Image 1 (cartoon, rainbow, N blue to C red):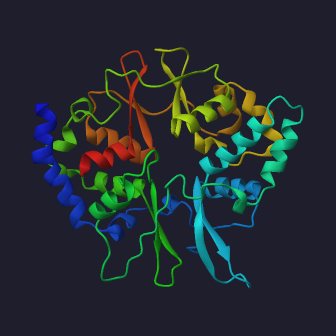
Image 2 (spheres, one colour; image 1 turned 45 degrees about the horizontal axis):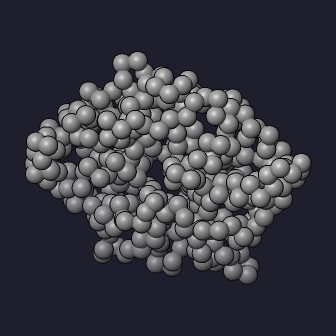
Image 3 (cartoon, rainbow, N blue to C red; image 1 turned 60 degrees about the vertical axis):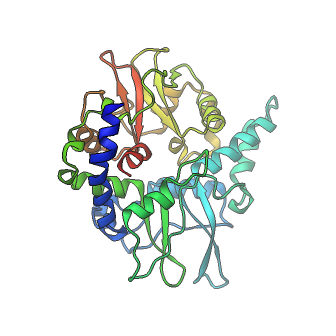
Length: 335
């Protein structure tokens, strides 16, 4: 359409120029101390030893407020390590659901879950399934631009999953930092004035969200939590909006990250309706931050950055979800 064509030929030139002139270090400098997830006050990153158990990993992921971390093999003596993969909540969820399905109909589900939680991380399948981390080595003379990272890491054609993070190695091959989609979107937001009219463009004209004439996939609030997680795995989704009933107002959002810190003795909670599960396990407001289709890109990014969100649902006048915009959508429109 004309609007999209105009954007492609004019505004995209501005956004690409902004991303080309900035490098990875520029994006990392936009962080506040409170936003340095996965890194402690001494500058050390969360690394998961492949000999640790699933339960130990989930506890650490919750303590550090992250959904994934590099999986390492620690050398004898505990000083050096080699990155051997990635552990994220979805990898753990995949293993958990598989074990529950294998034990379906048996009386000792809690026992099966306890056994799964004592598995070593090295026993989990698909360490790079999420694509949430990729290795991006660089040296001081060749720091990649944000445009390069977006094109070569975050928007690579490796379906069905999207890459959300990039592990940056230092000269010793150790973790130097972790760049996220959030870092890049925050940098763009802080430089919105350089995007010209694009910043003022309504969401509906950018066509960022789910195609408007296609109903967004939702879950009724009566859905069991375990069924919601099963559906995420089946449909390669990381989250679903929760509604009273199909076409009804948005009530909440359930995502794979809601499993952080989950303990085996809480297995029965997976049989709870999604809203009850979230009320028991999440210390946050259930109703998500939203936008309407007439809101501008600037408003959308403002809410994403200020509320530290990875997705924002677009709602109609009744509060019903009609679309969703993710950070990946934002990156696609900018390049």
